[in-house]
Image (tube, rainbow, N blue to C red; front, side, top):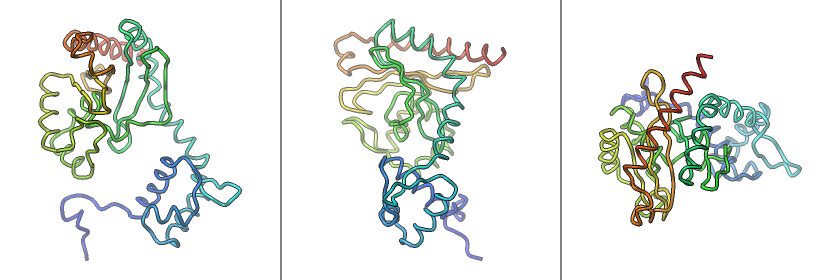
Length: 268
């Protein structure tokens, strides 16, 4: 019996049809528009007949919808799943928002709370802009930015060596800013430092001119469940407006408050 290469290498083989169906959903989510069946098939790299069969199945299960021109977009079932994912982090959001708001009001800088979700992706639980406007966005622009965001580095640093190896094997370290880490070797060195000091820093990594500091949020058992970060213009470091050690100490205080409140709420 033939064995897939992935199984020979100690990894379980993936189901190709499921992979392709998920690629369709991801494509339509990224394009944010309706597409013809033939265009979807071409975009995910399959024959038009194969693509049509996958699309027809997703359509009949309400994961896809059609417009008046017969083009396909995301369907009602995807909206229901999206709501379920958002609700998954409702307790954490409720515990965190009062303290995130207080921190935001103290220093005026944006506050981000992120967790690992899905296939090791960075999910935004809540985000407060520098003006204090609360955003709980359904459009996640941070999904593939674990390696170049403050919160992402905190969460990646919790990976075991085996899990990190597996993640790096399937992940392309994209360049989002002039100083984004795109080398697995450099990322390993960076994550080692994050583990040692228990905080992370990004300058011009997630975008040019963006500075970020982040710390972990622990649950009652001491497990890292999230990361909280603040973002500001990168030149704040040089100007002295942001003193890293002072800001890190402040972030750790608020991370502790969030963890404590979450435990209290869960006991009620």
